[in-house]
Image (cartoon, rainbow, N blue to C red; front, side):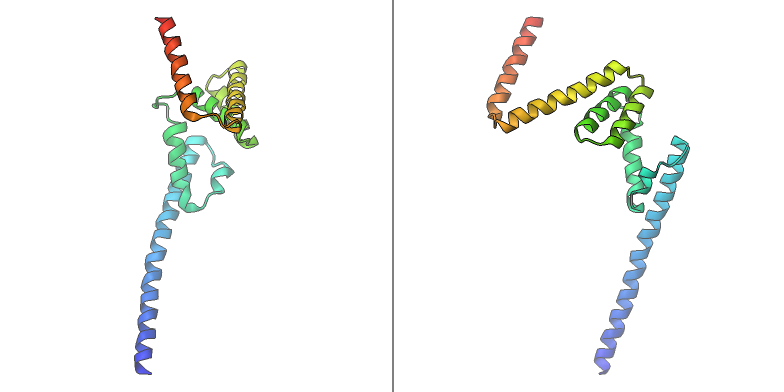
Length: 159
């Protein structure tokens, strides 16, 4: 009886210590979410509800990804190109929220109505040919060889 009492006591102590360790990271995650919300507010002027759909543990990472790539003016792609790409992908997913957002963001970044239409048309063309090639089970190695041959011919003509 005494031995089982010590085992139970040890288990209770171990569980208590475990709970302390489990609670501390949650507080750190809450703090990083709070900091991210403050930065979102400062950057965008408000915190859109889309960020509030995330668990606190994911907010800082999601914001860092958006801020580091999409909103960063010092990347290889300019803002207009990134938003036109976002619109093209959104058109194919399809995501009505993303289509609206990326259309407006593309316009804000200087995209014309014609550029917006062209981005959507390119998405449709890629989707069409993806459907045809995959559905027809075209041999990938042969496709790559033919593509390389076409590009080599085009390059040779341009020189």
